[in-house]
Amino acid sequence: MNNLNRYLDSEKGIVILALIGLMIYFSPYIIFGEDTHVLIHDNLDSNISCVKMVLDNGGPFFSPSQEIEQILNGLDASYVYPYYDISLIIFDFFGMYWGYVLNKIVISIIGFFGMYLLLKRQELFPGQVPIITVGVSLLYAILPFWSFTATVSGIPFVVFAFLNLRNNNLKIYNWLIIILFAFYSSIILSGLFLLILLGLLFLYDLKQRNFHWPYLLGMFLLCGLYLISHFPLIYSFIVDKGVISHRVDFYQECTDLWSSIKISLLLFTKGQYHASSLHSFILVPILLVLFKMRRNKLYVSILIFITVTSLFYGFRNSPLLRPIVDVLAGVIPIQLQRFHFLHPMSWYILLAMSLTWIYQNLKFGKLLSVGIILGQLTYLVLFYEVIPQQDTPSFKEFYAVKTFSKVDKIIGKPKRDYKVIALGFHPSILHYNGFYTLDGYVSNYPLKYKHEFKSIIENELDRDGDLKKYFNDWGSRCYALSSELGLDFLNNTPEEIELLKFNINHLKKMGCRYILSSAKINLDKNSGIKLLSPVKGEYWIVNIYEIL
Image 1 (cartoon, rainbow, N blue to C red):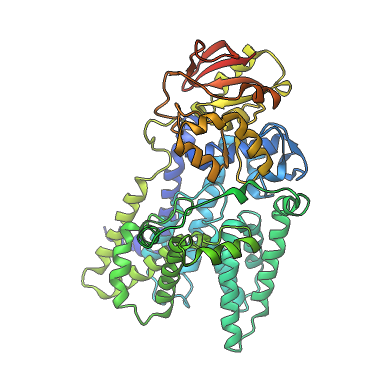
Image 2: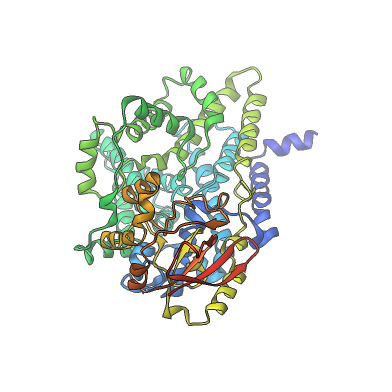
């Protein structure tokens, strides 16, 4: 027992235990392989298939002007995947599933060591306790980071590097960390907002008559490298300047006072899906310790930052802020509320600080702080990606390569020679399997195409007000929407579509020759199509309809 206690008091021993824990955490991905259940929303239904398309059309260093003919009747690669990043190289070398798994492991390790090194800094707070420093780093590392880059997980690492430069530490690893982050993160999700905070800290130092030239050089380096890694995105803005994006059609209704407060509270207490912090459980000790930490400038400053940015997130569509936000969005065409991508790091720094105070000042503080870490660890496991939720398909079942190989054989033509649409399942499945579609999920594409595609589904949209609002006010999912199918493709697909009010003539005009549907279509009530064959797969049933 004494040996165990000595081992646990050894920081090296705790780090080794944490890394073993990470290995165990990711072992199901390796043990079950493609039978693993992987996040579908904004992941399998879009990001991974987009990666596959650009890799199949030019590799990880694709030309931004390379046309990807598989999606939306042909889009420049810069619309499909707007970055050159490290994840593409990993995907290209290891394949789609194993590339995804390796990326997940790499960003988790980056998250662990980045948070660990950041929490070790004495200027943050003195008297760190190894079990807390390592334990909180492990908690941060197993957050369900979206999706397969270090956009969120890498923030503590790059902050650590900049704080080193601020202290005139010019060692090579600081510059390497910045380079890594620039090519493994998104400037429009977290990079810009991190740079804003780094810039404010630089101005604060300048006001104190402290000019840290290495720190400023690091900011210029990060900005410059972002210009390289995001060249496809920049290309789409400069070369296609005359092309109007479908994003100008985005519309959100103004929120009233109570709705704005509710949205702010939800972000403050639960976090946001794409920057998940899962901090509801640890919010209690963080706020309880606030009274004792009220003189700690860092602790209070981080809480003020989270509070202010949560309020901005909730009130951005209120009558008070909406006019200002609209003007700013016209100048900087990104979502300005994305400071919440910095919240996960912020919450776990606060957790480490609050647990350190508990550990050092309460009678049973050691036991309580370790108990909170274990409680949060248990809470995070409940959100483990590989645990099936609502009978969702595995990676292999979702993309159903064998099923769509049969579809390909039944159609019997080169895929390049015809277009299809997906009805009742995600078009990303077709893209993954090499089909050419009119539909797809893209965060940015020409508004002209959205209006053209709408001509196909307009009558169906008129039958369902929610679907109509979903497409008109957003439309990034440029899907062949059916009022009878709705949007829940995994659970509530009816066996038969009674009436499908698509504009078949416009489908043909846009080059579509087949409708691939998860539900049968009543041919007695729907003309202009004929059933070639149903294909029953492990998960999906695909009915192949030829357009006459």
